[in-house]
Length: 301
Length: 263
Image (tube, rainbow over all chains, first blue to last red; front, side, top):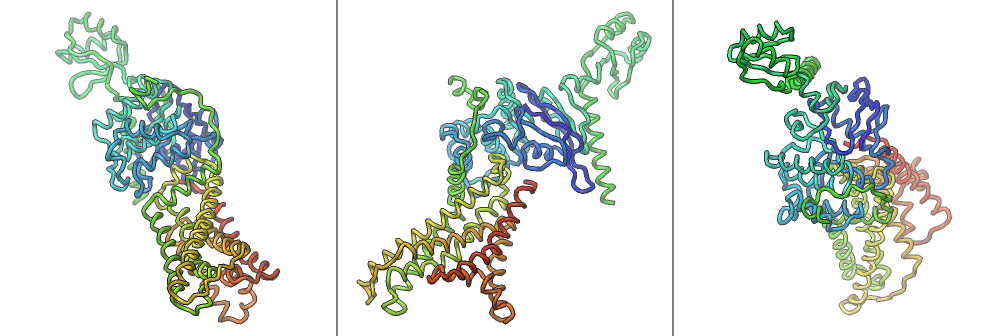
């Protein structure tokens, strides 16, 4: 369980994180989405007690991070997979933390096995690891203390498609067993496949927070007929709000039955009738990103 | 446990009743960190080798009556005094340059405990180095009378040993304090060697600074710890200079690390 309440971080006149509140519940994966520089990492560092907030609070399992006894046993944190001593081997990094956490070498073996670094890879120095291997090691490190909460900043960075698929499985499994997962990304598609809950941040502010299905399907229905014109007529006659899309279909804010009946009454053949794509969220996301770019261009000018 | 064999990722998610890692455990982790990298290992190995070299040089130079156990032991302290502070500096600045602070302080958010364990580890390494030099000196004192006309005297007191331990502990702690205050390896190493030397030069060339130098020049005030003859005034001078070179950077470093943002 992660609870963030009114977190704010100011750097001089610049507000990096502005009154951010959200909750990550046990048994769920929360995707923390936002363009680069939106305040995701700063928020996560504040949760982990690494950045002092200007105001607001964050708790893990109801306790401020600093007051957690042996926090690694409660929350596994991966903020930057490259922030490890290049001269240590993968196994040595895990062994050091295992010693601090008070978990045995067996746990180190199991984690190396889990992330696929057991064998020759564990004996190599991390300086020679690819980014994908560092992410795997970082996940092993986060899981080492057998925590109930995981917080991962851009964990899919540097992973190949197979690795991303694998990581989703690990995180899904962790949450299905009652764990809480918070993971950030700047790519909607990346978290869409694994998250139940989405928190979207832009320019330091929360712009969307809700169940993934609600957010993604806010776009209503997509309907496409054999002949567009009679279909549009049928739908407007039925009093439904219709928006044509580029491919000759329509997005309709109504339920499937209403659309189906309107088509039946007019004798129009339907080819597709389904929930609309994540157009709403995707569009909002793109808007945020372009806003951000516009701002930085303005700053540069 | 069958779940563990199929998917070791997920544990049982029991509400863990955990206790803070003890300072002893944190210190053990810090000692391991100081030795488990190539840089750390070789720095300590070089310190041991240079101390051995110093003892060997003494075996074949100087006058015969200076070839005693106490003299060998004392001779080994000079290189230790120069290199041990670097160990202390790296114990702190290495975390910042490699950005391992992100995981260190996420595992122990009470940063003052991490710093305390780093200081404890530095002190233990200094004591370890002095004990190792004791072994080198003993080795030399056994061999010296066989190969040269050495005095071979074993007279050595606990008081002398204590003074030397204190000398090296001060050296390593001042280094660690510089590391904490500056959080940068090159900056800390350069300033650690340049600042006191500049002060020593100033103190010896400008007559008005002569008296302050007696009280504030660490290389002067720690000399009695090696040579003996610690008067009450010498203790006072040592304490005053430590306030400047140890307490001030340590206090500033502590303040800086506790309130800074870890990125």
